[in-house]
Image (cartoon, rainbow, N blue to C red; front, side, top):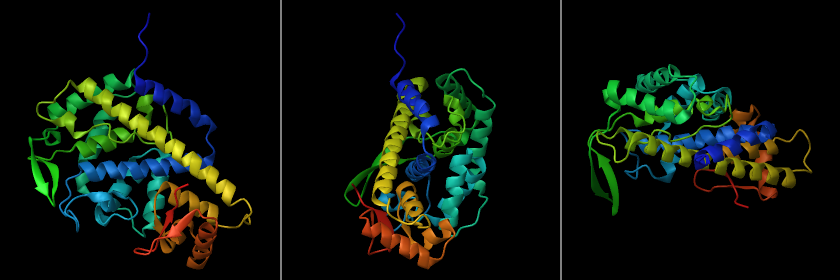
Length: 308
């Protein structure tokens, strides 16, 4: 009797089966939610020089649209707009427009380019786990700056954090792998599997064999995509229900889809993303508030989706 497929294969097979039937609004929302999740992983793994006002990444830094890492976010979005599959690239370009930022070219992302080149050289591949394992072995053997050093526990503001003696380029490998959904026979799907190359894979002496660590990372990433897909579909359905009586010309549905996928945005940012006037954006924001879908946050005046 054949052994059952690993859990991550089952999760990805369900996602693959759902993709042809996604409404455009759900597909776009999934791409934006994937971009938002990719940024959270990036903030976790990237070696930021400026740790921000709280001296640790925190929720503020990890929120794509509100992060104080503005220059790093610009580089991140610019790289994805050039290297990502079309749905993800469009989401990155939309976010750049909302933040009134131009495309940048950072030498820091050369590590991600090198990782992507090595991965592309192995495609097409029969199986994602075998291909990723070989790719990681190549990075570990030939790209010395990807390796991590040891770690120690440090106490910052009463909380214990792991500090690594030598911070490698795991972030670059994770981004590169996320740009190739075809690894999993997903083509140019409107999603990204975030965190496929966690830092544990680049320890000088990994705690477990690479295939086992990779399988765990793929399982976590697949579960995150499934969660994001369910959340986006529910958000679109709520918008359909609450905004059904609006005129067809209203920007409220489009605005709802933006903040549901990308996260909180100010009315000025929403106006830039949608290509409308600030007055039109304000009217749409009022419609969302009236429908009890969103609220203006007092501190930064960002429009935030309300929980159901």
